[in-house]
Amino acid sequence: AMNREPSPAPEPMRPADDPGWASYAETILLVHGPSPQEVDLARPLGARERAVFRAAGLPGPFGLVTSDNPRGRDSTPAENAARRERFAAALAARGVSPVRVDGLSRDRSRAEVGVALPWPMEEVRQLAREWDQSAIYWYDGEAMWVIGALTEAAPWRLEPA
Image (cartoon, rainbow, N blue to C red; front, top):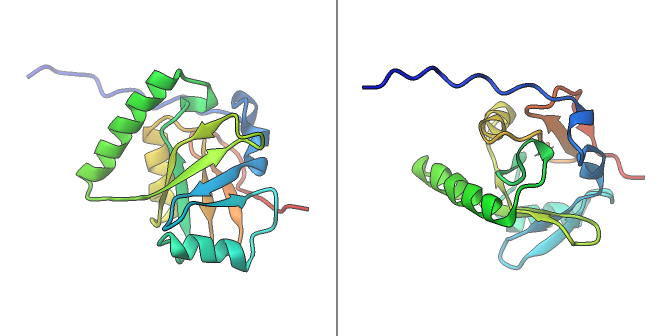
């Protein structure tokens, strides 16, 4: 057997290290439930949004993770596709069949494919760190939060005007 050094812990990030940090509050979520529905994080979350989450099988708190664009930096479509395949395989190996939730830019020119996991927040953050992600979204049953994974930042409650 080859002796391999354990891989070093990823370097922590600051919000300024993630070019998309400020735009997290403006993301549109595409929730792939029985019929795909959009949830606009720039608007307050209410009964309609909770119903969309419930219909997709997310009745309570959950975290959102992507494998796309590690460390908030754009990868090529081919790199993201390969990462998604490995991510899906890693989740399937754990017996997890997550709900797909994509994050779209306001003009819909960008999309990150993600998954919603009704796990404890720390487990979702750990998975995000394993996939080199800056942050996760965390839904606590009422509000959406941006929680740092690699990024060291205070939890950020999205409170649309």
